[in-house]
Image (cartoon, rainbow, N blue to C red; front, side, top):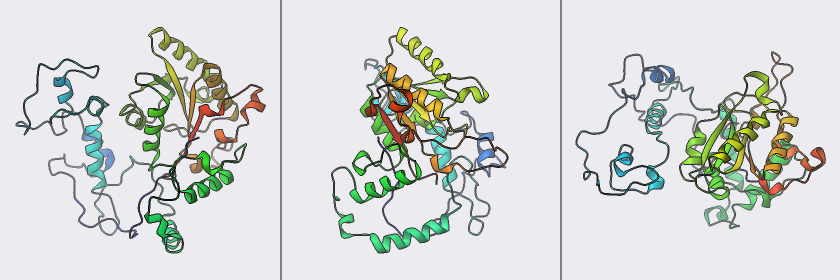
Length: 351
């Protein structure tokens, strides 16, 4: 059951943004000083186009077309010398990535950059920033070892990190069985681990189902390298989208794909849901487990927002978060369940 933690090398810590903050390009429309106004003005026609005189050789026209398009079609994404089809044939997020890069370089700071951009496009939690900086500074001073500068103490990641993560999951995720350090795989963020996970679980062209609407970053995480088909299942609006009966729509979509010759290999459940911000009931999670067992599918539970759930007096009947780890699937459903098909993904970047 892969679990992830976002990490970075030790460095000097500060609450202040980096010096030399750049500003948005001068040719942006007047009033484009916030994330919302930037996207309000943005259109494909307003984004910078391809250079009129690229410093690359002209496209080669005699290449045979590939499943990812002709060489000319691929050059619409990348103008340089031929790269692999894996690199050039994925979803083109270039315009949005460029704009987000622009936003990050001009972030708001009440003292150093009061005219900077307040970004609403990235889910980050800064409520405990000061406390976290103080805590991690002390932790590095007291616990950073010489062995941390080497290749480590295991071929599968730091044993100390895995032990700490297992303790954390056992305390906060209420697992039906104790999570052990050797059951965890760590990486440098959920995107990286999802990329590796689906590259391992599925073959190119196979389908993974998930409830729509969904977090659009999955397009990059799953398609860019693994080349799987991300197939959203359209569900009813309101409470019905979180009821056990939704798995009937998953089955219908899987059968529809099978008629087209497309094999479905996995299902993603995003809990708490992004972007709808709701949690799933225990009964619905068990329905996901039953469906994947009956259809012989991998079940990937993305739980990165697990610790972002809180009580709200305006919604007294809101469901608490329930982790897939907390389900005793075999005893609760009365069926055999292959736990090797369950993969729980978690990271700390939202805490």
